[in-house]
Image 1: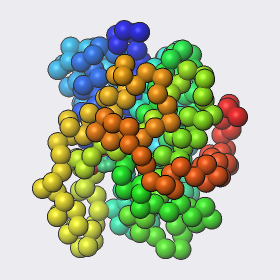
Image 2: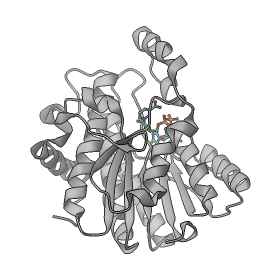
Image 3: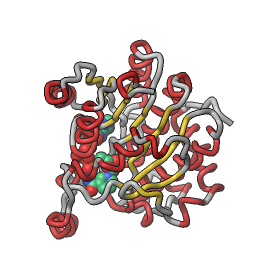
Image 4: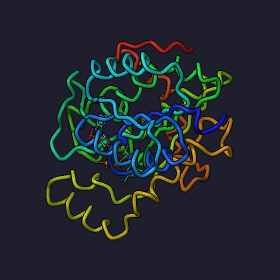
Length: 287
Ligand SMILES: NC(=O)c1ccc[n+]([C@@H]2O[C@H](COP(=O)([O-])OP(=O)(O)OC[C@H]3O[C@@H](n4cnc5c(N)ncnc54)[C@H](OP(=O)(O)O)[C@@H]3O)[C@@H](O)[C@H]2O)c1
């Protein structure tokens, strides 16, 4: 299929890695939807991408992954406009700025946005992905997943919260979800992969508060790569013919790479899946 005929949705396409990914994919001529909370920023960025790329099929649609109601409204809105979805790029994500907070649905915010919101959005859009015939789901995880533990009876980290613990478990959840969904969708024409983008100079590192976190992030800042470089693996997985048909894999620097041993635990992935269906109230139309 020609890039011009494809519909691509990028969550968090208005900043950082997502914005650089959107700009590059817009140059290929696809219809592009940027989805995130900040509407003013989203409109400005989509206008700028339209102008630079000459592609007038770039648009913004509001989406708050910290609200199941917003995700459901977004999915209805998206489906009323588009009958197919060729690439779903689950890029949006955050690290907590300090204290534990909760989403509108009462979930710890990091796992609420990075995993549960992504899980629900993907499920609600699955029929449009299947309708495309051959489509791709790409989720931006992180190599920090290897530090994640995923204690199933304390996913909300009510007992011992730390921003890094919450972030690491959410990024491990991204990979477990990717592998489990790939298994469940095998043979249905939808591939599912995930990636680590590198340590990227985006606004991501502006969030952490507290002296320790600031010092830690201050030390790595000189080594961060530009957002355009950080977007390369997302662009590769979204658009390259080289990965046609490849599913259930983790990529770093555009290369298939092993993820942590825990991320291959199928029993853990299945339990997380069941909890995610309960938490979101959404049952996937796959086994
Ligand atoms: N930067 C790195 O070194 C690094 C390393 C490994 C992995 N990653 C991952 O890469 C992805 C992109 O991060 P980035 O570095 O580009 O960070 P960023 O510059 O902070 O961008 C994050 C994006 O996510 C969106 N977002 C945050 N909360 C949201 C919500 N509740 N609903 C909808 N959208 C939301 C933001 O848009 P609004 O604020 O407008 O909603 C923004 O567009 C994340 O998944 C992150 O975990 C980053």
